[in-house]
Length: 142
Image (cartoon, rainbow, N blue to C red):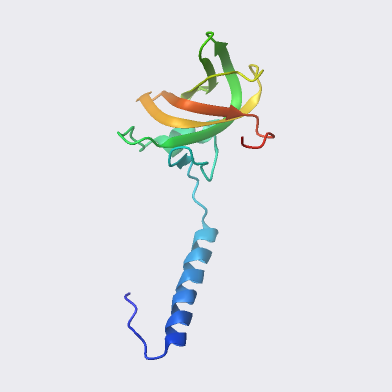
């Protein structure tokens, strides 16, 4: 519904403010679980392993980078001298998530971590985040 110019600027301002407040309130009623964000931005939501398949089911890997974030226990921690590979999720039916980063930061298998990075999906059961940052949920973002 387009706004018509009013002869009373205060009335137009009030109408615009009411529309803004009502759309903000509507957004608060049903918060969207969106673990995706623009590159190097923090997603508004960190998916849990049991949510990954549903939250990523229609998400294609495109030419433009998009970041994805998930929190869960580590199932793999490997450092090859150059890169660190942190794996989480993967208990059926959850897809495996591999975070490719530069250091393990003394993280161990079983530690609960939040990872976020460039999303790609080589197949329905495997997600790669590269580049990726990992931190324990109780650590503040660096």
